Length: 253
Image (cartoon, rainbow, N blue to C red; front, side, top):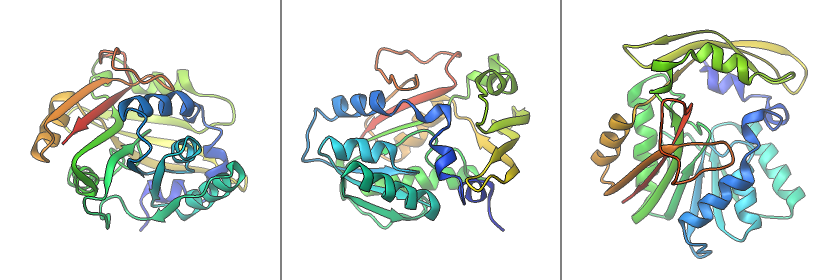
C-alpha cells in the first residue's frame, strides 16, 4: 500500500511549483552559498529535491549537485526545468532511507520537509538522518529544515494552515496534534496536475530542538546549530522561538 507522501507526489509536480511555500528558493540558496564559503569545488547532495528548485538554482551558480527523490513524477519535472534553465546535473531516484552513497559529499541539504518528518515512524525518520550522514565526507555539513515542535505547544496548527491557505493551493484540514507522539494527523485536499481533486490522510512528525540535537550527536556531529526558518530568508540571526513553524538545522561532522 502506498504511503500518503507517495500518493501525493504521483502527479503533482506543476501544482507543487505553485505552492506558496516553494517561493523562497533564491534567498535559501544565497544562505547555502554563504555557509559553504562560495566554494564551487564542493559536492552537494539535495535529498528530497522534489522538482529540483534548490538543485537547479545552485547548478546555475556553478555548483556540482546530485538531486535525489522518491517520486519519478517530481524528478521528471525537475529534469524538464533543468533543461529549460540550461543546466545539466545528476538526478537520481532513491529512497532517502536507503541511499547508495558513502562519504561522497561535502554538503547535504534537505529543505522544506524533503522526506524527513514525513515518515510513518520515528525509526524511519532517523534512517533518513543516518543515510544523509553516511553520504557525507568526514568533515561534511548537513543543512535541513523540519517542523518545529515548539510551535504546536503555543499555537493551533489548524489555524496556521488556514491562515496560510491560498486559492488553488493544497489545504490541510481536520488537524489533530498528538502530544504523546508530536505528530499532527490531518487531511490534505489538493488538485493534481490532471485536475483531479483528491484528499489524503497524512501525519507529520514535529521535532523539538533538544531531541534533534541528541539524534545528530549520536550520528557523530560535533557542531549543531538550530535557528528559526524564515521562508526565503534563512539566517543565523534568527533565534528559534515558539512563533517559528519550521526550524533550520545546521550540523557539521
